[in-house]
Length: 142
Image (cartoon, rainbow, N blue to C red; front, side, top):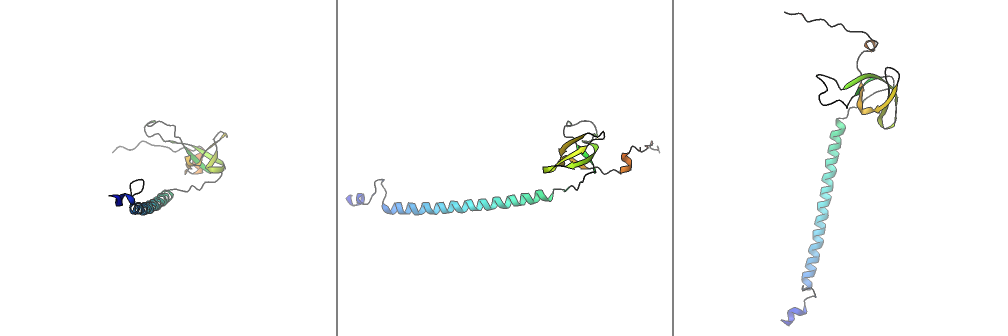
């Protein structure tokens, strides 16, 4: 029994067991590093695909000063009324500010600033803006 205790360390392990445990721990650390790098790569690929999908759906608005736009009213309730539109106005663009903000002119000449994401081009003819009316007739009964 004395020959076995001569080779043991104070923690009760032989030097061979300590060397083996150290080598195994180093291999485990390398394995964890490989798993971390694989996770980083897959995360990078996922982010690139998500960004490409998002960028593909962005519609670039080509607006300039003097254009007429509609303003999205996000404060309407869920069901504001049957067939009521959330787009209001016909506003004229006065100026573009940094970071996508737009200064709009109201019909009475007052101006206000909104986020550029909340506007879209008003596609009506300029002649109809001046107060012309469109007559509506009763449908003919068959």
